[in-house]
View (cartoon, rainbow, N blue to C red):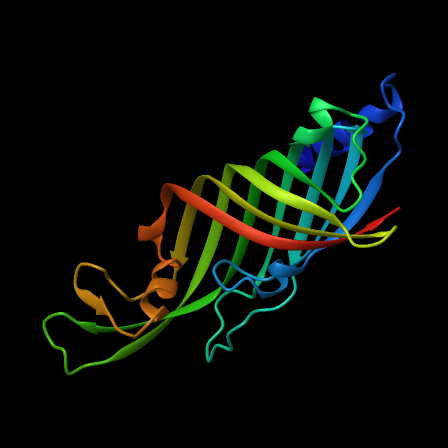
Length: 226
């Protein structure tokens, strides 16, 4: 984690010796969608974007888990975690012609490297495959780490002289490692129960969901030009 923060600081400090820097443009942002992220965990996530030149910028972001959506009857691990990413962006229209004036908004394409980790107590509901009359609710601890890379596409909207709105989507590869503790559920002997997204969400907390997979992300940032 310390090395990752050092890299972010180093990349953001490039402007101190770059001769090309003529535009001092910093934007402080809040990632609003991360406050209600139910598929991983909600975080208060803040980012800062630094324009290196008219067509290229670096966006660095970090967030800390501030609460848990679900109340548990038994606590094995207290919820805590963080998310961080760093993204290099190109604004294509400015790359073609840096003199183009962006009155309302700019399309950007980014390459984002991300890392996140957290822990909390989860629950899985199941019945033994050899006896469907029995029902169990199993509370257990979960520790997760995830890292990967996304290709992002966004549109930076200038709502006013100071306010910026930024919807975005991204596609990439995610590798995650999940470790459970104090768990009784066994995927070979037991069957998860539930309707809708319940079995899916419960499955995301189990060790069997570790590994590499396709990643999709979307969000909405609200920014303030400094």
